[in-house]
Amino acid sequence: MKISYGAQDLRKLDKNIIFKSLKKEIVTNGQFCEKLEKKICNITKSKYSLVCNNGTSALYLSILALFKKRKIIAIIPNINFVASMSILHQLDAKIILCDVNAYGMIDKNTFDQCLKKAAKDNIRPNLIMPIHYAGLVLDVEKIYKICKTKKIKIIEDGCHSFGSKLINKNSKIIVGQSKYSSCTTFSFHPVKNITTIEGGAITTNDKNLYKNLKILRSHGLKSTKIYDPYKLIMPSLNFRLGEINAVIGLQQIKHIKKFKNKRQKLVNYYLKKLNKFSDYFQPLNFESKNIFWHLFVIKFLNSKIYLKKKLMLYLKNKNIITQIHYKPMHMHKSYKNQILMKFTKNSDLFYRQQLSIPLHTRLTKKNLDKIIFEINAFFKKVN
Image (cartoon, rainbow, N blue to C red; front, side, top):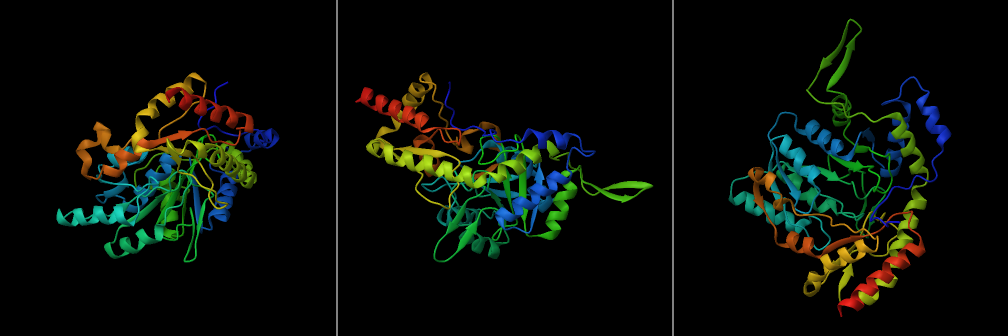
């Protein structure tokens, strides 16, 4: 059997509750969705939560609600999934591709680099969409302090990091608390930390934004009077989540601590066993009780980057599937007309170095031993 880089864990689903949800009069955007939203608020410590049909929709709704018909000049990390860029493309936004740090994320330094160049070219960005990468937590407070003076909105992309926290001497950041942003978006795709099969969510502390998101989630229609059933507030689409998806999400959240602990144990085992390959690569991950790891990332040393493709092909032949997260945005030619500025140096290097090896809660110690054995066999072969 193949060992995938990521997989859903639906082994503990209560099928009776799923069948019960199908017997309800309302089978979409109903009471189970509302219960899931409350659970998400409890975990993230946010005031409001809104579930939708996927993480891409969560991003799209957030931008639409914040900007409506205004022109958007957005800063996004160059290391990114295509969803963010495609949404901005659809909204006819202009884009600044920000470079990333060694952890694949925007930070204060790379953000400052963008802003200085933008100021020289008389460009005024009004949105930044930083990513919490691989389960890690970006220190959003530092970015917030800059954005506050320049009137730049922040939408946190928390799709990798549901359940993660950053705790240090000076601050505590919970992904999704949206303490330093307008809102945070999440994906509950099957490979994420928890899943609703397909699904997403937005958390915020802004009541007006939450109200707008609720309207936009369902075509942009607002109920009025019985003889005049609805008013179109703003053209939108259907982004509602099904009740059956919400039921699955509620059951996943019941096991969230177990999922988090299991991933951390797998990460710790990897760290212990992969230490002997330090002449070839270094793990991005580390031991932490606060991080809910979505990916296990290895970064090849500059002198060993040429081995990455060979390792991927070798492991594939052994039914071990790896992945790259992600190809830099500037390499996708479809977006070139919307890119105002691009910073590529660190992103290009990260792309060449980065490789995600399997990490999910269905993995066993036997699976990890096989992966480690084959990695060891590969490097013995190339020496």
